[in-house]
Image (tube, rainbow, N blue to C red; front, side, top):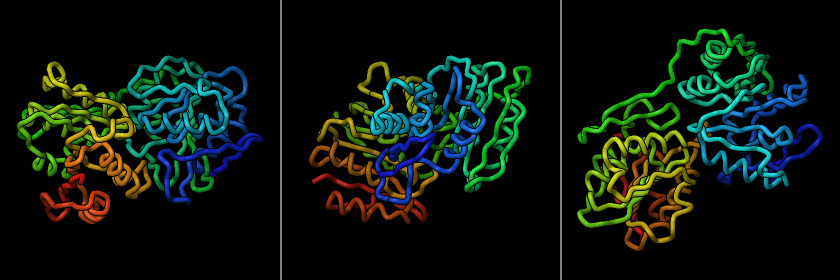
Length: 378
């Protein structure tokens, strides 16, 4: 059990999904720094309207639950982590409301506490999204680990919110505090990109926090070239669908397929829905697109096919736990004889994992970087 102390109270805070790595915690020094600054400067006293952004495991929301903040982020897993950690600490789940990044904000907010994400395009989009909802005199405090935070992050904060001062480093973390300038002329536009789904004549829209945001990922391209083709009806899932490229290709190449596309990113789900609709695939087809914790909510032995380009990291933590969890979910959801078909970097050794889990695994295609693998449920 991981215990975090704040303002005279101990909190149990756990990562979601659970991890086998005992060195990983549900908070980092940047979270501690943000909370310490709030206490030292009296920022959470009084009747302030507080917005928390990119709170990965709900650590800020749980510690500030008495102030009834609004928490906003792009990850369903973050929402589940917040709910879990509120429950662990006996805190009213209604005290911290979660708002997906794709839903409209309703301010004004006096104080915004933000964790700086990995993607600077997503950071820019987030700042542009919150700016119209800042109260006069609002303060925005952003925190991140020094080794992960480029100077661009602080420049964007100043360009979009207002005058910004950065702190000294503390436990390898740094904060930036910005004072809202309502008269600041902001030139930047919300970033998005569009590119073609090769060979199918479909344009894909993508938002900053979606995998392969600016161009087609080469692994996904290889899997697209090696998708299963079935003429009869079958139940398929695109696990970690991103902007919907694999789901669209399956739907176009397999007209009888029923397809479930899932992703933990709300931006990914929004893009996938829009791209499927633009391709004319949502009107008369059995296709669902959901924000979900993988296939955890899928009925056991209900699928014939799962396709997936699994991630090898969660946020900035690199490892195979998320992929392994996806494989386990797929095995549970597949019917006997059903297939999981994935693409992965060759050095990740997914062939060994799948052979151990499914009993067999074959290489469908490979090159110097990637392998497309097929595992059949026995």
